[in-house]
Amino acid sequence: MAKGDLTRGERLQIMLSPEELAAVDDFRFKQRMPSRAAAVRELFRLGLAAVGIMPAEAGVKSGDFGVFSTGQESSLRSSRPKNGSGSKDRA
Image (spheres, rainbow, N blue to C red):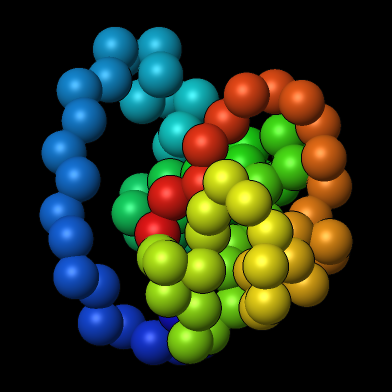
C-alpha cells in the first residue's frame, strides 16, 4: 500500500491490557504519531521488519508466494532475508 493511501480493506480488533495500551500510547506520543491506529501500524511494520518480513511490492499476487521458486517469485525471495524463523508468507 502506498504511503498516504487512506483506503484500508480490513478491520482488526484486538484487546489490550492497560499496560499494553499505555505502551502503545507512549510510543505514539514519543513518535508524534497522529493516532493509535497509525502507531499500531508502525509497530507492526517495525516488528515484522525485525524478524525479516518485508512487505510485498505492489502488484504481487498471493500465487507468487510458493514453496518452490520459479519465475518472478524467485527474484522476490532473493531480496528477502532468510532467517529460518519458520514464518509463512501471506498475501
